[in-house]
Length: 171
Length: 369
Image 1 (cartoon, chains in turn orange, brown):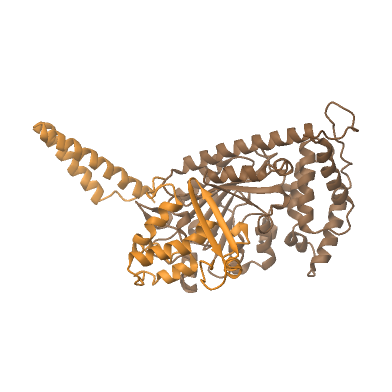
Image 2 (cartoon, chains in turn red, blue; image 1 turned 180 degrees about the vertical axis):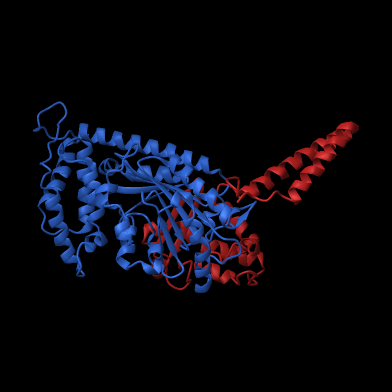
């Protein structure tokens, strides 16, 4: 069996990690194992290691093998394969297709539901509210309750205004 | 003020107490944050890193929680000082390797520590003695909320906080605790525990040492997944698991005392014998023997000693701390001698272990089972 990274030397280090019901396996030669810090448990996580591999392969597939470059920072997939880290926050947009499967295998979900900066939290709440109002409006229109529909339309307008012109965050 | 003058003496920090500190040595919550559109530290050119540091450092220094904090650029810290910070678990080994363009802000109580331009632009952590994950999360959440008004974070409504490594994406949270588990190790149950904790999506690793060894029976348990879950759920899940590990550790200790007291007393007695009498000892052996003495204290074998003494020795016998006491550069063998001198001196007032054998005189052999 050849090393998954260099594909030259025979693999001598075999790692398996089970997270939840997902099994991840890596086979490395001694050289690459050392280089990837497999011997240092404090600095090592299998997910990090797999990242360099799986992600770059997936990225390569999603782009038909063409090397994309981040317009913001000039980072390429080849760099990702080497470092296992991205170049800048914009890279998440640039490499979005390739990253999706990776995130799925690595995390509980693929959508963030935790804390958000205040301004974002407001936007998130307003968009949610807008969706609810739109639903109500559709219902009112269907049931020909035009008075309610008119009120809802006004409310939607106000909410949309707030979304487009958010109150400046406190400093 | 130098970092050395700023840090509390280990004797003082070892006296900090918290819930379950018999087994949980400390709790930590770390958040990873980055600036929008600025290249992550690992990819940025030096000039860009320096600029990011110049933006971030004043913002961090101006936080009400960090008034009077120690703040320094990493290139102004000596190798030895950085190593000391690593031995105190205040910065990562990776951060210790950084120079110009990276920084550190640390408060007086050593309960808040912000690494600037480590792998991410910001790695901020709250630390607490004992099991206090929730308190640590609340503290770091407040720091983060204050900071978000001062800095333009890289955030996507879909993916959350954007991090250099996709393993930290979303919440950017790493919740962890440092556990002392000699009972589970002696009872040979530790691998079982590690496996079942792994299955819950949590990582367990030895805190000291290389490879699979866990020097001093100290383990770190932490979450691995950061996306698709709310912070508080991650904190509570880890807390629940930790409470179970604590219970297993206590059970393992009770079981060992009941079924194999001689084995336990033998380990503890020998640990005391070596630490109090050696004339040369490596830091690795020191850590393992100190762990057993710490267990002995928990079991009431050393009425004249307390846990704080052992926890202090855990810190000050490590290489950089030892080196700091001497001006000339010490070779490893010289350190081993000086370490042994220090241990003999500090343990002089600690009397021999006095095991309490349950139910019977001290002569019985361990039951076989």
